[in-house]
Image (cartoon, rainbow, N blue to C red; front, side, top):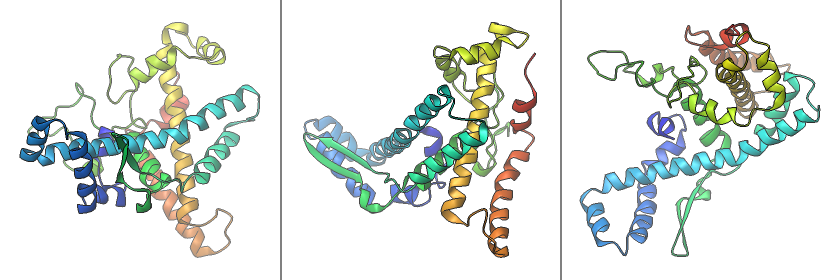
Length: 288
């Protein structure tokens, strides 16, 4: 949520709407209803309206993420069930399932409604027309998979040190670029997630990880690599679904359409050519 809030602008109209007068008016009604029995907070809101409004914006991003995962979580669970049943013959089958699933829900509405004392306040109404692919999936991939922010302790946030890029577009600290450190803290490495996933590691992955020289001692690192591999697949699926929504089918015979598709994919693939990208490492390195 914080990464998406910080890297504003990727969600296009969604971020613009969060700065609009209509959004501020909707948020104001909800804030006043929520604090109507709390004169102290109403007074604080009167003195520092932007501070309270910023908290509502964060809640709007939480709503955005909630709707994103409301779609993706069942997809991942279903993929797990299909794999257990032997339904996927390989990665291409899984990718087709992901792309078709994402494209099928691309137009699902993104909104932010809250119920206060039995009354529904539409802070971001469905009528604004925000959709799952453009206002949730794409910003999530951009902010979390590509950008995020430097892991505290690896980069100095002191402006004089100059270790953090001055241009947000140059941020490349997301999961697709992250080194896998089993240090057990939040940040660029998905270490907390690795710890959580370790408790639910399926038997077939345990057997695969035992084949490495470090065996059980290396499970966290190998799990992190597995997670990164899967996130490259998800990123690829979102790119393909976005291409389907914006451009032309891959089997289109029109040369101009094919060139437009090529330009789109090349721009995306160039991001994997950065020296920080982990795509080649996670495919070839096994940390033996």
